[in-house]
Figure 1 (cartoon, rainbow, N blue to C red):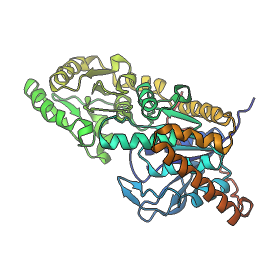
Figure 2 (figure 1 turned 90 degrees about the horizontal axis):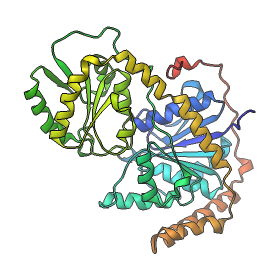
Figure 3 (figure 1 turned 180 degrees about the horizontal axis):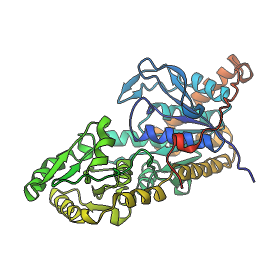
Figure 4 (figure 1 turned 135 degrees about the vertical axis):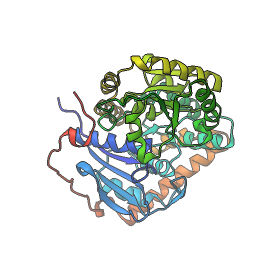
Length: 414
């Protein structure tokens, strides 16, 4: 029996041409969903002169709405003024499911809020871990609690991330699915001929920020170089990342917090033995024989790197690459996400009072404020319905493209 075909709107401030794990996730997931026969459009903010509607591979339609990034590629929070354009896109594309990505995305939160006001089913994917004590985390957790109070389903990239999201938002655990990030193994392959040289190259690809453990590296690198003078550490630019991974021996991750860390998958796909801190969802990423875990302590990390160096002669990069192809596959992720959409559409319809009453449980004062925000949003939506009825908004025909094989755009599958 044919599965129900969905019409999905992916929403996030983070998308191409910006570079990162969330951006890659949205793009590749959208491509696979298109190949499964679903309709997918992406909504993000403008990037430089990239504004308006653009088309990408396989007819993926992207709305670059004319808002500029405010801070860290996030659009400025407008709350209600974003409703008209979100409503127009939803109606024009005949959307059935709205899928927001990343807790730090302003556009994601606003789109999910407006979509629920209009009665659409919404799904949220959390890509990060947050704490509970610092001012920024407290603020973000309250925002997340507001957004997820009326969400249909949620997705986390690891079981650790699921526990974190449930604790931060109060979302029932049965509403949260765990679907890991995936790497495009076609882009990350070992070198056909491994170079013979006397030195061992250890590569680190990460942002030099506290969360990524940059201060740990300052202590680890001198100790490793003193114990093994033939070691060479590298930190390539992003544009050189793939080329460097193809020619190196060992990859090091020193993060202090990670929900998943897709860079570990990229390194393993290139046949590199990985040393990483045992934090967040990292222990769930790879089997024990493909990664050496250490506590976020310089001494323990040095010992882990020494162990990895001793294991290098037994590592076959080609075998590791083929194992990664078996373990992680974008088409499998798309099919699992498809199931989440099916669950979302099965959620029962509720009237306005039943839905907005959920916000009252978000806190003594915050609950009342959230309740008021949703009532105002509902009234604004009804006003828009009177000013411009849905039937006056032109629906866009679906773009039909000739079939493109998976090998041209997505990772290889057996």
